[in-house]
Image (tube, rainbow, N blue to C red; front, side):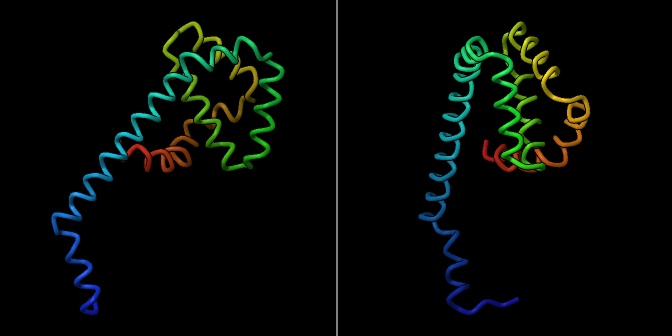
Length: 135
């Protein structure tokens, strides 16, 4: 395939040092963004999640979860369930993790729980994999 001369010039400029520096800066910014998001996530897991779990009743949590799942629709709610499960499994405090897993098992019906491994590979990982490739 051949490109018009103007397109060839634009393609060849990707190799100049200015563009390489720009791409390096973008890459650095993505790493900083990833680190900030990861730190924010860890802060939430350590402080906000246990606080909410202690202050919001189980029935209110169930109601909110059901509203979120209805709003998301079928495919997005499956992705959300996988994310919820993985988030619970990543809680560092084993006592809190066990309590949250028990709650998850009480709130989420049996069949969706059994489908989580399949949804992880078919729905969740393709979406999250794109984000993880920047880390």
